[in-house]
Length: 230
Image 1 (cartoon, rainbow, N blue to C red):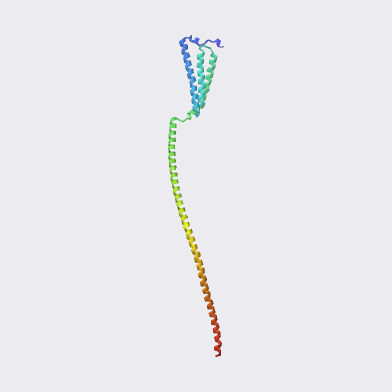
Image 2 (spheres, rainbow, N blue to C red):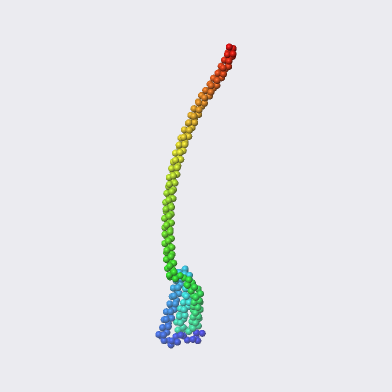
């Protein structure tokens, strides 16, 4: 089918300067078009965290097709492959239409939700203030913690000293009780001995009293008849 057409150079009457102008222009545009997607793809690879990095892929695809159309413009200067050139242009138009629809339906709503530089700056200032407040709070908490540890250490030392004093007092009290117990035991033994002697003497006196009382009664009875006889 290409044989039915003539090369595009015939339209320029094969004017060397005119053909050269179109040749260099289309080649330069094609090279520029092919270099842009490489830059976009590199950017997407380095920034995978972007919320809409898919748009760079769409732009890269249709830019490659645009570069291909310019290469075919160079090729058709000598080869009348206009059907191929037209097909690539149709593919480019379809890709551009798809990219434009994606921009309006997906990219623009997401981009409008992005904060402005002023909002980002205000949020950054607020974040810095929160960081400073948090650092101050952490420093205050650290100081309180150190004070608490010091107080606990002091109270622990005081408690240890009190326990040592109580232990010493308990030991002294135990020794005093032990000594007092020995004294009480000695006193009980002595008291028992003394009480035994006193009771024995008391019982002896009582017995003597009873004997004397009995003798007195007997003597009184013996004296009565003598008086009667007289």
